[in-house]
Image (cartoon, rainbow, N blue to C red; front, side, top):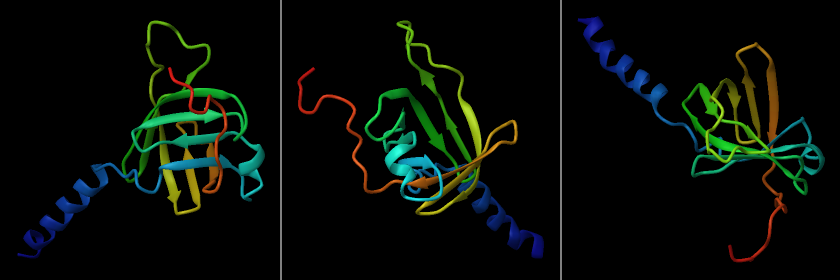
Length: 135
């Protein structure tokens, strides 16, 4: 009888782990442990529509772009460096294990075991691009 009681709880936990977990990930992140890194280090911008763009700094060039998705414990993203191929084929997705995610801190591990710590850059404006120019 006890086993039957736990079964629905296990199913809910399994479903929750498979659902997208993008709310806390959306935003600008940089490697480092102080706000100063947001001013000078490369910025990974994870946008709410599933686009990822990496800038050399908040005022720097666009380094790469791609797409991303996340579950509770995995961030999957493509990382397409410039020059981009005109055939539109993206590189294979990379999976990162999410070790910690809070409002200000994001730690991942790649397939090789390398750990990367990032901090959130809430109060920056990325200035690369053309303001208000039609395309």
